[in-house]
Length: 303
Image (tube, helix red, strand yellow):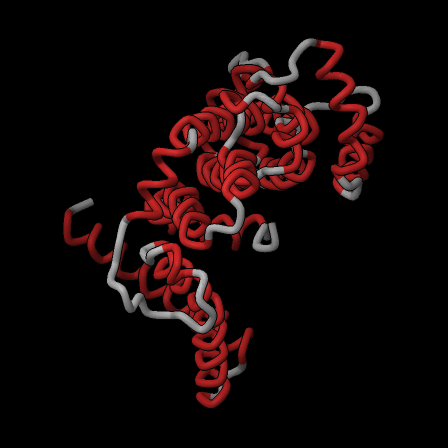
């Protein structure tokens, strides 16, 4: 195939994608231009409602502490300052907590994706006794609130000597039934002909999993990994319960201790929040397209 043919194929594919997007838009908000204008106006209003608190927090973090406590104070009349950031970085273990959060979120993401992918492959592509029962139990566990497992999990970590350790924070978070269910649905859509051909060539379950299923599932694995990382980074309840040593605290837990130690310091609180949100902002900027695709593919927009 020549270069011109490749260009033509890409243009035809792009045109088909644009046509599908237009059709989906019409099905979603209707064919009327007034409907599209109304939808755009609603999105602008919702975006403004989301951005106003973020803008207020950002501006407050650059104020002097006395001015930040004033009511109805928006623009810094006394000028911009980095005093709040300097106080937060010098009077707390913020960098240690950020490193802990990075380690915990990375470990949770890796182990969750690995375990969920293996479980989903077993449910989707293998037949074994009790598979149906285990699938129903997995689906039922999705409806179980995680808070009711706090006490037994803490007792288990205490018995294993994992309190105030990274593994004590990580291990209870790696079980994610909803991710197993999402990956199973994706694995079910893999053409069976590919797997049957590999089986004829002598491939076993592990080879099917590592060399065929995982490479074909790269997009959904990246989407799941992003959502798991964000959830692990923002998780507060379990790290708060299982850690008391500041050297093992994650960022959300550490920030709560800063608030208790220094009282209500609005500028410092906002500076801490901005620093805590910075890594997630970088992740979003780097993987923005993957996150949008993940919301559309997995339906995890409410997570």
